[in-house]
Length: 629
Image 1 (cartoon, rainbow, N blue to C red):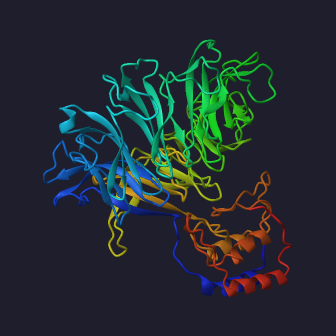
Image 2 (image 1 turned 60 degrees about the vertical axis):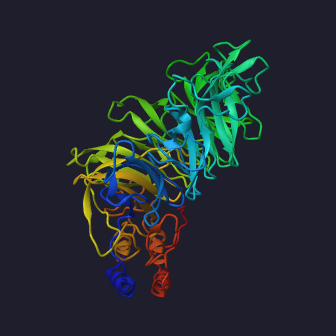
Image 3 (image 1 turned 90 degrees about the vertical axis):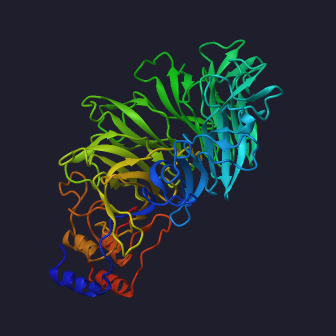
């Protein structure tokens, strides 16, 4: 332990630069609240509820809302809105007639979620009516940029690339377009039913994507399957999602049929990363790795990033394969696929007798080449309370993020994760976010749901929890505190392909939050960067952090030593003996404050701290040791 004289000297030298209050690490911005006026609507019209909040990398949102008030009826009580707190605008409202798209132009409903690009382009699917519809309903895909709505596709119109006498839509099959997505550049992709004299069940399904704003056919059921032989056809009757990256390249899976196709090779994964659609891999192909005689049987929908890498879950068969090891997590491209992990492997980060049992659909492949997914576990001491885990994978390894039953960070002593209630969403900064139900000491139905996200160090933090109190008024002089009763819209696919992204690359999260007084709001949370040296997570490098170092000087925190991490030490846990390395973290960042993730503001190094560093080094406190941070 450091001598009391030196400790008093350190405190006296640094007390003059202490600033700032305690800091929670999360801030909230209110975008819209129920009861407030609706932009673009007549006086007396207000928001009554919110759904499907999309978020882009500029911190803008797009969402659906229900309306109430003067003149609001069942045929005009829905709208889509976009922007931020200071510039929220109406995109479209139910009952509105859209100018410039033809006679079928009245928006009859808005039941589908909007998607949002980084340029602020909002796209949505909606049924249309009007004089040209003769009383019928026509499905449409539309986009809004800078207040102008454009028609992308309309039921009854000819699709690009499919030949004559074919149109969008299929009588009796419901809505013509679905699984709408958008990339950062604003290019749209979707699935569509087709109709025509020469259209039957074998060719009534197509995948479409924009390239530079021009709609193109990506794949159609019944067409020749690229790279498989002249008599092999795409079978898209099982709906398959089209994943498009920011370069408007795409990937998809498809069934196969035709001459020579059997149950062992009747499906494949395709991409057009090099400009030409080709097979990434096909059922019957050899599984990468050392096992002899193992082949693929089936695939999940692939995800695609800007580097042209795909990731998917694959079924496996072979001489030594049974129900315990028949699934694998695959990453790579046409030239080089890698088996990252497979069912039956020992679960990384958990006890040696716990195994990977089943991989769920991959939620995200980001542009760092990372995958986030949920895994079911099996083995000794595994039951329904701890049989699910989230993992982060790269091209070669699988790393544990969190497991059901683990302690929930920042939630309080004795509180653990009970059940995951969303997929893990991964952004292009490598951060992950998810929602989970909680259990444990003091948890009841009013405070049993939390949203968590990892910070820049990979440590999970609690962002918001039911039962929390949030000030929803942006005016710092006016306090309007409300208690959280529900949290929604924790979903989406991060990285390149956006369907309903709620976690952007700056670690902002969008929510629909309900409050105990019956009100609700659209809010954005912003995580902050933990400055090196802010060991107690106060939001600033200050006296409390110095006290943690000095009061525990020389303590060996190596696992197995019995000491553990000192109480109150939250960020950047020490590795080994607490000494000069930890002290440097405080002195070199003294006065630095946590900042929004997208700002990355460095800590300030004031002259007193620098001078004290020299003095302490002269006292021979400890020899410097090198340690990776």
